[in-house]
Length: 123
Ligand code: SF4
Ligand code: SF4
Image (cartoon, rainbow, N blue to C red):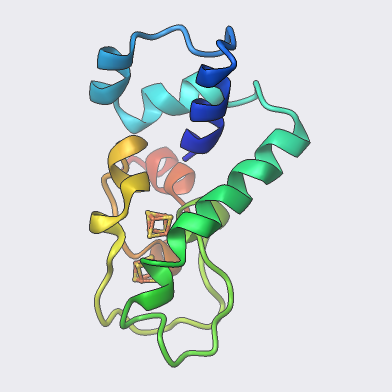
């Protein structure tokens, strides 16, 4: 889920990325997470969330499960469940670039929780 940091780091030729671009594309979520986890400052982490939120506005922000609920939060794949969304009326995560970039394999993060938690739960 830290692809925007990935892009930023890659442009800066950071040492964080040790995998070829081709291998990165085919890596699992867990492999990608391993590349970033614990290697970002708090500011970098917060910047990543902001950038995912920006992207997410066109997906979570427009999906039938989100619309009309009064929920203002986004990027549930990173931040976890919504306290407002209670019904699964459709999920646009599969169309979101974050899904492909980070090899996310779940959906309905607003109800099911963040990707890291789903991974750790063996789902
Ligand atoms: S996680 Fe899926 S169902 Fe939930 S708000 Fe986002 S796009 Fe909609
Ligand atoms: S994968 Fe889903 S929750 Fe995550 S940024 Fe994309 S639309 Fe939002």
